[in-house]
Amino acid sequence: MKPYGKELILDLHHCDSGRFTRKNIRNYFRKLCELIDMERCKLSWWDDYGLPPEECQTEPHLKGTSAIQFILTSNITIHTLDLLNNAYINIFSCKDFDADAAMKFSADWFKGEIVNSHLIERK
Image (cartoon, rainbow, N blue to C red):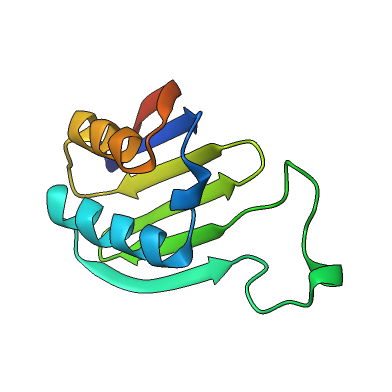
């Protein structure tokens, strides 16, 4: 059976949480897509941006930013945990991409350590 695509699942710990801003994450998506030759489409956010302080998340496993960068061939998602200094990234595409380059770039961008990675061939 011919592969449909692949998905890179990446867990980064000990990141610089100062890099978990919307502006920086938007730039990350832009540069990553250039690196792995993906065409960006819509970008969507889920976070506390614009909420009154009493409605913002305070639990370490919830406080952060989630975003999905739709690409022509699927999507790239990120979930940051500001208080834990962790970032969780998934890159899924039916178009081939350089997973090693994506891993190194992501770790360097967020100044984190790769503690877990899986590359899955989708069928």
